[in-house]
Image (cartoon, rainbow, N blue to C red; front, side, top):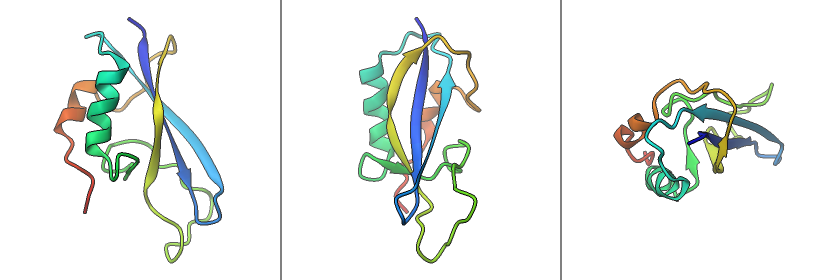
Amino acid sequence: MPNIKFNYIYRDSANYKKFGYVIFANPNNIELAELEKLIKSKLIDELWFYADEWKLPELFRDYLNFYVDPTWHEFEGLEYTDEPENAPFDLNELSLFKNSLK
């Protein structure tokens, strides 16, 4: 089974976007629909998360104004890929993440 690409973006208050992704190894052949359901259960309104809490690279633009710019990131989706793994943690650790609501 191919690896899994987790796509996400950062969107500032002016709607400028910066795209990013991480690639997880998929040794247990997890289906995308099953993983997406788990991920969405951990997100704020099934969409947003704090990248640092998820141990993912933050995608902030060069200038971040904490008075108006959000600090959360937006989950875009999952896809299979043949690209090599580069994720900072194992897919199995996702179930340990708490819901991101503060």
